[in-house]
Length: 290
Image (cartoon, rainbow, N blue to C red; front, side, top):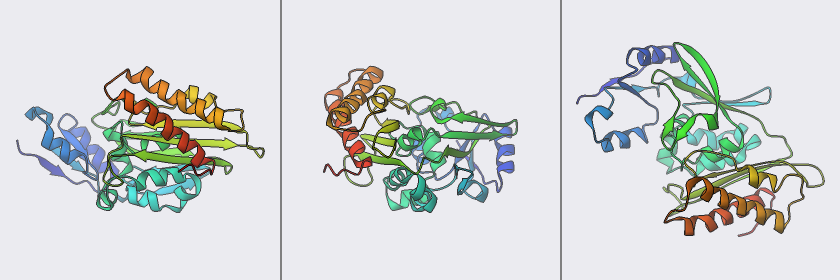
């Protein structure tokens, strides 16, 4: 089958193309995932007739902080997010997550929007975005809609995006200046590694050190992005100590088993998920546990 290639120059043009070819098209952003998917697709009908390249649409690439809201265009690359002064100031663990993606070449090509829409359970950007309670703006010729990040996913590699829709931006409320955060990732190697496990932690504390709010979002151990409410409750209202951090970490491992069930990897993943969460909490608190 021959593939067509269309390169719109504006979001409006892209929406028109997708509206016309919504049953036979696929958006190409950084193409770090879609090219692999096209090669591995088995039935011929799974391959789209038209590839819609949105890399030349400058209005989709930005990082802005406006009225306490951080907005990131869907075509913003991992490299640009990792280097963004705004992200380093308000959500440095998102910068760390984007810096952990693939290699320098992949970070230069791969985009935050592609990482979200691909919906891999191991996507590096998803745990910090989940901890930040991020939301997404989807646009089409029919209009626009905003959805919570966690409501965007139906399962591993499955989302609610319609064939004629484009992910325009991801946005979230900037954390309080008193907040602490951390992102940790475990892979088979230090670079060019898909996460075996990851976790993002966001804590808001008062002057006494008591935790007022907590967000804990693991990656690569659940089919979809999610926060672990039981783990968060084990920290809220407490000044963190060994006991409360251990309890919180244990809840993450228990939730992984509750949601994903017992698998061949559970014997390894559960204790590692607990240990990684514990390290991330202490890292967010400024305690070196290495």
